[in-house]
Amino acid sequence: MAVAQIEAKSLWKEYGDNTVLEQVNVQVEKGEFITIVGTSGCGKTTFLRMLLGVEQPSRGELLLDGKAFPAEPGDDRGVVFQRYSVFPHLTVLKNTLLSEEFHQSRLLGKLFGQKKEQAEERAKEMLESVGLSHVLGQYPHQLSGGMQQRLAIAQALIRKPKILLLDEPFGALDPGIRADMHDLILGLWNETGLTIFMITHDLREGFYLGTRLWVFDKIRLDPQCPHCFGSTITYDIDVGQTKGSLFQAIDHSLEDSRKFLVQ
Amino acid sequence: MKRLLNQHPDTTQKIILGVLPFVVLLLIYLVASDARLVKNPDDKLLPSISDMGRAMEKLALQPSKRTGEYLFWQDTGASLTRLGLGVGISALIGLFFGILNGVIPYSRINLSPLITVISLIPPLALLPILFIVFGLGELSKIVLITFGITPFIIRDLQGKVLELPDEQLIKAQTLGASSWLVIVRVVLPQILPRLFEALRLSLGAAWLFLIAAEAIASTDGLGYRIFLVRRYLAMDIILPYVAWITFLAFLTDYILRSVSVRFFPWFHSTK
Image 1 (cartoon, each protein chain N blue to C red):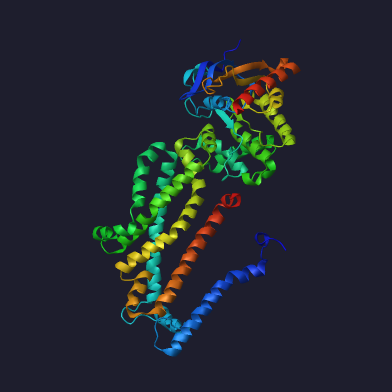
Image 2: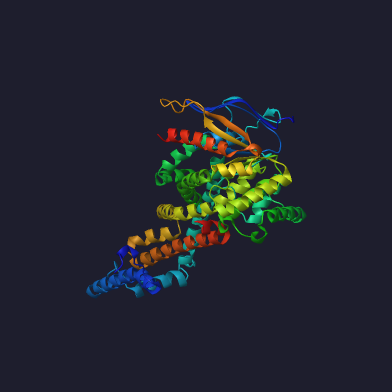
């Protein structure tokens, strides 16, 4: 078995008395496509934010290549959020160029002359691969939601991060456009071989896209103290071996916690 | 018949309705002025338009007998220079501390209480101190304007930086940005149009402080002139000066807005 790229060892996350995650033990290898589902408030976003470096574990360990996760965001982990992932004051091309400019010009964050031309060349290739070559000079507010997310993906992938984190990236899109986006993300994943974590609230999307599906859910529910127990990974499924009955079982178990939390 | 709240005027109606209050006010003034002048041709309170014209001609088109200067333009130049310097310096200080406090938590926690307290000091109450410390020259007037509007600009911009979605700052870091690069490439360009908005909002206060300072200690300037001629009840000078100040205020606001629209198209079309 290959060495795990990411490993969680009895990971806990608490905010005061509120336990969000408890006893998460998991290993992820390079190149996996992990989709994460769960009810709202189940801690899936907290887990993603820990991978991002914005949150730190309360107890336990979270390891990246055998070392503790960096405590702040960095360029080895790209991210696409549901909203606000692109910069409204930059055109499509400049949004895509930004990462190169950050890396090559530490003082001004701007490239000029030949370096700029070379970087623009690469940015245009990247934009071509996400199908945005025709809107290079437009600002994000002139683009549709789907195009904005394509731009966010291009922007995140241009420097080839090791890990891509997606927080409900297609949640706000129409079904038809979502299907296009699925093709796009699967294509990019096949090409680059990077590890992807994607949160979704759509179980079908999770099964369709991932090589591995996680369900975050509470094992113990205490009506007197709903926040005393945190969530953990209740299902960890190799998506290759799925059956219809399993799909229904997950849906049922999530429905139970959803009802519980709404009370 | 549609409800009143659903009825919208067409273009011609819009222009007529917008201009109407001005015309009405002007008419009221002309009628009242005429009535007083018929009773007493030397009445100074509501001078006729031609009186004002003559007074302004003297100030704007003929050199002063005493100094050889064209007083109206000298006043305008002096006031605009003070206003420009005061507002410009405030803009730079406001931009620097607004962004610093918005982005760097250590700086915010260190400086926010101080800035809040400073912003609560009534600037005019400080005017005597400014005169004592900086003398009666240009410096104290510029400092008064700066002191009066900078805390507002800092607090406004700091708030606007904090309103930037967290996602943007995180995304920039995942693209490899340092704190400095986040400031110059992500925060500064998005805050500049906000600075223009803040400046437009603080121009009214800036004029207030300018005229107050000029009224108390000065030898030229629009505020100086109207307070000077007040002694002679020279409404034929005061009224045109007030109208001119109003026009200059309108013009600066218009220019700031136009510059902002020209340079930050993304900002004005997303709002």
